[in-house]
Amino acid sequence: MKVRELDKKLIISLKTGDLYFNNFYLSQKEILYKTCRIEIAELTNILQLENGIYTPSDSFGKFMNEARKNYNLAYGKKSSEVKYLFSLVGYSNLISCVFEDHECIAVKEY
Image (cartoon, rainbow, N blue to C red; front, side):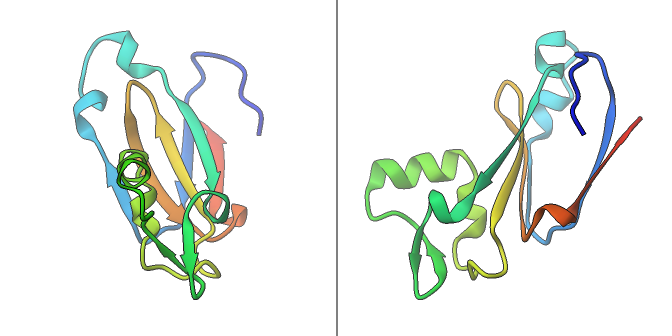
């Protein structure tokens, strides 16, 4: 589904077992905090793998960047079971979760 209207409301359902949620910005009244975008990252292109399992970077700076972007949700998980990170990004990361494939996502207009 392509959404081009700025004020369109959507219901997004996603099957996941691991979720990061930052309620601070969602509870703010200013419109600045109400605008967001969806990012989907393919984890095998970003994270280090050892024996088919996602591991943290050996570089401290890269490790901190992975944690800031919530890629750490995939640490210790098999790359065959978790392939993507879904993030709802506004002023900062609002919601992030890992999932197996695009079939896990359902989007409908509100």
